[in-house]
Image (tube, rainbow, N blue to C red; front, top):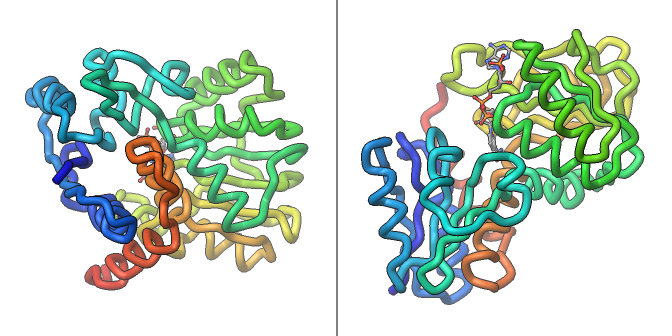
Length: 279
Ligand code: NAP
């Protein structure tokens, strides 16, 4: 029996144990995936425990994505540039950090919405941790432009500068106005169940291009006010669950070298969400 798990605080709400366990079982791998609730004071010891030979590694979630970095040996992919890790892989006792959020979002766009960001005009709403991962992943996919709006403008300005330095045509914009964009992504927590702004949308869609794609990364509830407003205005919509599954699928493949059974992971996650009490 080998182990993997998710390090966060709290982690009880996480869907990762549900769909990662289903993926291991479907793939015939003898791995137990556990929720590892870890207060900040216990983080170093928890990360040290990942070096044991029976441990494949871990996912990392709020509030530890940045704090784990000093305890790792090497950073791969975009994680060094982002300053945030969501996946740790144990390779012979050495710990490698990765960030699969941005690549997971791109996989969701391509696989679930048949959307290719190359040449697209993109509006990102938000400039927090998830927005950063998505912005850098999008930048590599050669969009025409990336516009970034954020409630706190200085964070949008900083992210636009960094993404611009990575080679994209990126600007911070003062208003969340989807007009003229092919892809609008909600990377804020607005609309998230229990998040304090759950009945709100970060933008309105008057003047948006009909047939453009609106993607939310919030996945509880499945239809957020942002997605409902986009749908009503004639846009195509993509919810947040595919990003969650594909970031997890990429982590699964980093740990095991085996293709992730994404259909099985989707089904397990959807079943768990259906079983949750309605708010
Ligand atoms: P974060 O780093 O805390 O960033 C939060 C973002 O939301 C910031 O841009 C913040 O703006 C903005 N925001 C929060 N409340 C707001 C409000 N009332 N009005 C306007 N803007 C507001 O969080 P994160 O890790 O990026 O996560 C953001 C959301 O994405 C969460 O709902 C999370 O669950 C979801 N997520 C989903 C996936 C997935 O796989 N589907 C992965 C990661 C995250 P300020 O900068 O002004 O505070």
